[in-house]
Image 1 (cartoon, chains in turn red, green):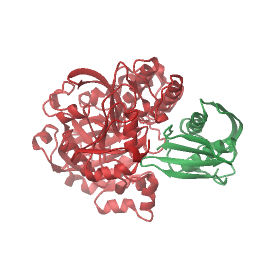
Image 2 (cartoon, one colour):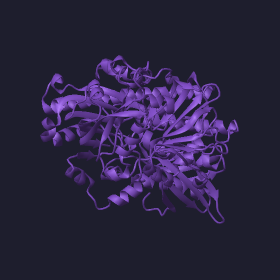
Image 3 (tube, helix red, strand yellow):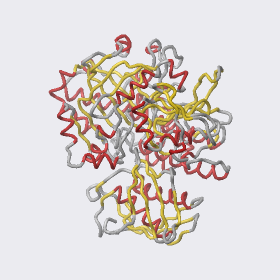
Image 4 (cartoon, one colour):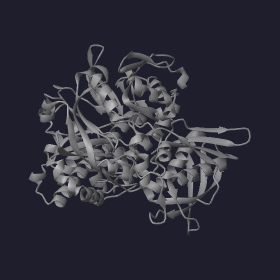
Length: 482
Length: 142
């Protein structure tokens, strides 16, 4: 399908529809506004929304969040739910970095207290947190330990002394996906996972020290322990080479499976298998291993961040007061209960660059957040802001309990490099009061603020469409990138 | 690797990156595709002691064979820390490829990473015969 064949209808100021045509089984629904949708029309992401709508067993709509951009197979920012009986699971609908996600930690510190030490803080974090291409950390996993990480997730890390048990209830699904089975993993996946636990990675992964600079909802901010002027830390990382290998292994196997089953797909990257098939079950079991690895990874990264700050600032744990606010994943497929045509059903929800956003009262929420809703963490680019939102009822009725996951790229990496030519991005950021340290200048250029959509516009759509409500805005003080 | 003239161009993709590769025949196309991918990734110095490695890959058709072939080269680097410096395709059909690779251990002091490619995708993958040459389009996950 070509872009000129995509018909896009405006429903209201924040919703756009792609009517069902051709092989589409359901219509497309894009949460966006007039300004954001212009950029979306320029790449191929709307074609991808329509392509996903052709997959067997899809229900409701093929959805896209306001940070949608061109991915491979699924668009980034895509959400699609499938019937368990005749629906499929697609590794491309989860992504290579399985359970790539964010965790936000609050502290007792105020930004004014640490501003004079920021240069040292960024340096120390950069030194203590392994990052960069193919980085390995100090942890070496035996095959047995790797299997334990794969099955137990964040709880394994807590048991090893990284963080505390309280962190688990503040993690989506308590930091563990059920059904993980290490026996389905390839030797390559195990090989790539053994030395990468406790590493940040490269590209858009980061650890960011921030200040809460605006509160939109005092009551919810209070429930989340957020206050104006407070120092917070946001970590963005995933399952590293391990998750990539799992995705790669199953994409290849499913690509073959699709040919054998004579399934017609508009894009080979949408290779999939029925959820109930042996292949579908094995993918789920392997994906759960990678998801659990990612939760353990972020748990460890958080612990090292805490240690680094305590040492550098010479303060005790109580003075730092670092607490996990929440950990969310944004590349995942999960079996969840949703209302569909008036009936409660279990569906397989793919979130490819989208965040779960449970409203107040949802039974899956821990007691501490039951009355206010799930914290939804949305990182922006490193030069502007990140946001904390709370899940809202509109997400359950419109998007299978999902919200956006970031600002969304607007420039390709090569265009960003061209635009950044001759500029010192780190200096520009420093002029704005943001200290950045990265392995390579290229990463900084590729990830420069102009490469992304204006996150505040993305958040505005999410808020006004009723998917999640704004709670607080965070501004970066210092960033380390791979 | 860097001294070889390779017929490829970079394709822009919002989140990722692709290459358009040309070759006079299928063997050349697959050879150029592998070395082009590595050139995008790594800046390597020539004239090194290399180790010969034999590699065989099977696929369901040419696009699948391309994804699997490049995936193997990528795994050598990511999983085994082995960098392919040269490649010769000894045999190729629509479902199999046999190659002889000249490799060196990856050394971050000698080999500068330009861009991390994390995976070879099937998205819009194409291997097509033109009137007098072959072309392939490949999009990578970064």
